[in-house]
Amino acid sequence: MNTDSNKIIDSFHREHDYLRISLTEKCNLRCMYCMPEEGVSLKENGKYMTAHEIVEIARVFVNLGIKKIRLTGGEPLVRKDVVEIISELAKLPVELAITTNGILVDKYLSLFLDSGLKSINVSLDTLQKNKFKDLTRRNHFDKVMSNIQLLLSNNLHLKLNAVLIKGENDKEILDFVEFTKGRNVHFRFIEFMPFDGNSWDTSKVVSYEDVIQIASNQYGSNLVRLIDKKNDTSKSYKINGYKGTFAVISSVTNPFCDSCNRMRLTADGKIKNCLFSNSEIDLLTPFRNKEKIDILIRQSIWNKKATRAGMNTIQEFSNPVEHSKNRAMISIGG
Ligand code: SAM
Ligand code: SF4
Image 1: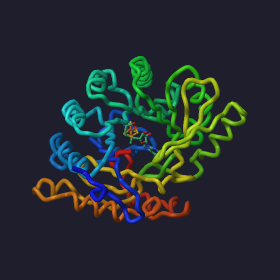
Image 2: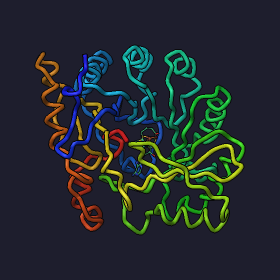
Image 3: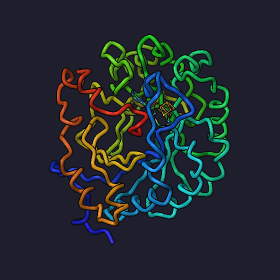
């Protein structure tokens, strides 16, 4: 049983109760901001967690008081044993959620409904078919759009994620906002973040301020700021009279580290205490050796830095040397 003294906390008294598990480093898209053009080299199969190991390692986290698990990747739904993983995780006393590119949603809709999956995030960086192919290097726009419609007609709580990149999709901001007019969706605009191999630089970032300026010019006093929940990573808004809402995740210009409650488990079984940290602790090898891993989990989180893995200023955060020390996003699990 979990007690207060059992909670996972860091040296800044932040309580960690949210785990993001990457199921795979593979993907059926090649998004330019996530995966280097040449791809990432995969490890041999035995280096990745099996379905059973994912569930058992997740159970250790649950015993340490976590309340939510989100499955991510790579593309979590390309794993052949995803049915087993989701069905087993759904039996744990946590809220289960998933982030997907949407391509395989129709194949697994009944699994989502049966497992009581509460929240589904789908990546959608453009509303234009040709642009989708440019951004993702694949041609699955129609499939993703029809699957978004499918989720909406089944009343699943749907968030759409768009990474905004100057010169790529920033002209679509108002189109994305208009998408929320008659649909019960929450559109989240994510500031483009730097990772190994994604050609990031500050000039490509569309900031929180930029988005709100554009929305405010268009909608004036009909643009309404909503109240965010504790641990929310985004700042939410709506347009008066519109069914849906939208938000900005400002990890670059205005990080939300003060209230961070997240931990990440990579597909090869390493715990990362921050998206931007290159320091990882292997949980899978000791787990396979039947050693206790809870102490390693606590140690990883205790060592978490106050802000973005110690990159306190935008200058440090923008340094390409720092980016190349970390993994590509596809191998971390966003
Ligand atoms: N394949 C799934 C998907 O695309 O939703 C899950 C994995 S993906 C790595 C998780 C999230 O990370 C997506 O919403 C994606 O847009 C976001 N992401 C990837 N690279 C990013 C970057 N460089 N900056 C900001 N967000 C990024
Ligand atoms: Fe694949 Fe998601 Fe990365 Fe796109 S963002 S390449 S869909 S893992």
